[in-house]
Image (cartoon, rainbow, N blue to C red):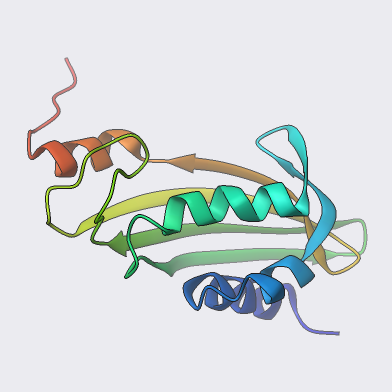
Length: 138
């Protein structure tokens, strides 16, 4: 059996290659995404909606931790997502410039496939790059 880290790296490579058949084979028929159950096809659609506006968009694993105990199989990752949006991207209009956004994501694996995904994306960081304005917290 492949290690969780290797399965996850394969998953990220498949997304970067837009190999949706491979991505589909790595997820359960029903995925729980941010507490919402959805069929695998809908989950893949969520990913394609994020990747299609930026054809050069790539996910880079910055940090990867895996817990591969018999009763708890989980992966957590910090991803750097880089690309140049050519169309509206996550509700924001493109500027022609490349962007980099951070995503923190947690996966639960069942039977060697992704069953649950909990994801948080740095939307404020993305907005500040897309609008080229600084964001200040008071």
